[in-house]
Every structure is written in structure tokens, then in C-alpha cells.
Image 1 (tube, rainbow, N blue to C red):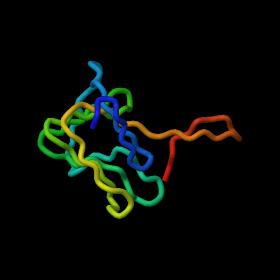
Image 2 (image 1 turned 135 degrees about the vertical axis):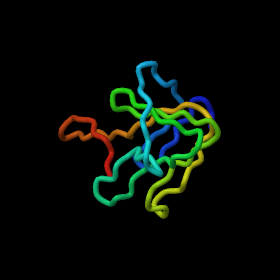
Image 3 (image 1 turned 60 degrees about the vertical axis):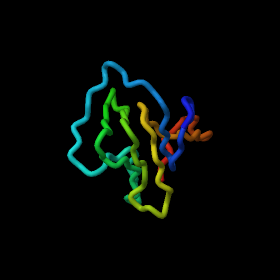
Length: 110
């Protein structure tokens, strides 16, 4: 992964970023963290909780610090390939779509 590379995974985006000083560390008690909720099919985009992977929140935006590597995947494995994320700090986002009838940008949904 290059310094400015964006990874697209369904409607999710992950890109290198600094963790803001105002971010708070998330307390994680599950096997994975849902990055993008599946509104209809249950095919959530998740990052597995592994040693050396820490999550932060800053005003509803999720950030991740990875010491070695992390796995980004979907719960329904046949829908998207898993992606290995190398060491670094990252920010998660959602792709947007433009609706010309309402003149609004909306989060892409599955």
C-alpha cells in the first residue's frame, strides 16, 4: 500500500491518515469491528480484532492503528475478497453517490 493509496471494499474506503489528537480509543470486546453496517443483507464490512490492532473514534469517524497487519473482510466471504492492511494508521470512510433528482450526496448502501 502506497502512502496515498485508497482501498475500496464495497462501499467502504480505507486510506492512510493520522489519528487526531482529539480521538478516543475504542474499547473492543468482540472478534471484529464493524466498519460499514449492511442495511439489508447482514454482510457487514469488518476488521478482525487481532493483537496490535487498535481502533479510535473521532466524532463518529473510525481510525485504526496497525502494528503488524490487519484483515479487512465481509461477513459473507463470497461477496468481497479479504484485504490485508499493512502496519500504519488509517481512516475509514464511505463512498458517496450523487442523486441528481434530490441534488444530494448520499452514503452508498448495499
